[in-house]
Length: 100
Image (cartoon, rainbow, N blue to C red; front, side):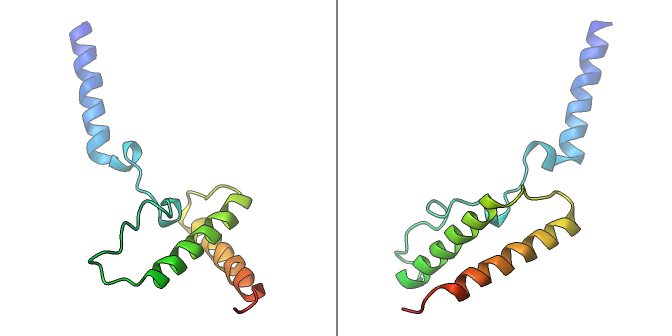
């Protein structure tokens, strides 16, 4: 009886991994990436340092905004509204910055 129960649990685990891989290995959203570790070096990529610095700055500003808000929702419609809220706040902060 113990072997049958163990076999059933093992088969259930395999089925769960096969049908719901995102449950065990959730995909990272672009907002969760570390701004310093995911861009890598610029050598050989053809990306100028200015664009990389700008991208790092925008990512840092977006992470700062998201840290002040509530956690990211799991529902797709609420995620759209959350992204719109973050983008609006990002645009407001960029518009308030002095041009240099």
